[in-house]
Amino acid sequence: MRRPFAAALLAVLLAAGCGGWSPAPATPRPTPAVDDTTSGVDALFLAMMVAHTAQTLEIVDVGLDRVTDTEVRTLISAVRATEADELATMRGWLREAGPSAAAAAARHDHTGHSDAAAGLARLRAAPAADADRVLLDVLAAHQRTAAALARAQVAAGTSARVRDLAARIDRSRTAEVALMATLRAAPRR
Image (cartoon, rainbow, N blue to C red; front, side, top):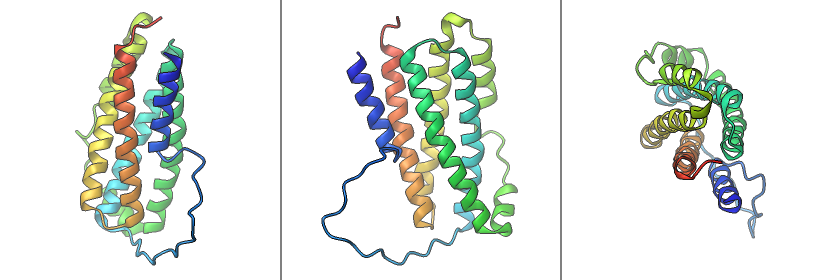
């Protein structure tokens, strides 16, 4: 069970862009000039993902206090590391976009985009024996929403770097959800 889990976790981290190593290209390629102006759509996505990622970090922090299964703990620790890094990147890009883009994104009503508050309440109230299962349920639902937001950005965004981040978010969250389903189905010790 350990080897398949380790392989699956590695796949999640690589999808998130956290592999740490990538082979050097055989020949240097010139970097194309890319206009990375952050449009209103890009700023809106960044603002929504900043809020969503902050909620994810809250979920995993509560989870780290509650879960008992080593594999679940390892997964949510990896999620925490990846999303903390992404959060810093997205906040920086929002600052770079300037006050008008950030203000336009801030005017968007984020109510109804997430059920994180209900999930957190459910996780906090779960009996200790159910904490691992509840965490997997809550986090999987939350990550499915992140993947859906990211797919929408890939389709509608204008900034190449924001669309690239969105594509990585989609891949990593989708892989996490699949791994959580595997963990959920595995007999717990």
